[in-house]
Length: 93
Image 1 (cartoon, helix red, strand yellow):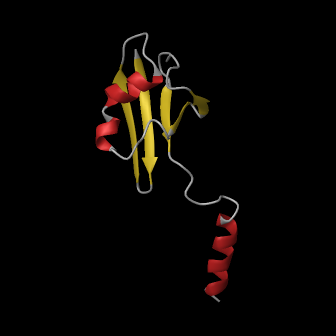
Image 2: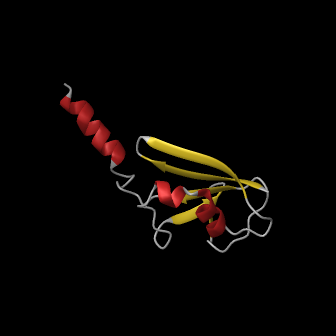
């Protein structure tokens, strides 16, 4: 069956379509995709994963057409981003 694997970093996004056996888990699809070799900083013990934007477990079974997403940790507090942008706009005056 065909599934997708997605991962994004600042300035770089990767989306792969791969063929996996019918009984594949999220983790086996990620490992089979080769994405862990391309991005060695991905640590499956700490990175969270999801399927179509909903959190998933590494041992969760996949269905044909699923898109597995590997999530990075948040590097900025989303509540401060608008405040920071407003401060930068004020500096332009």
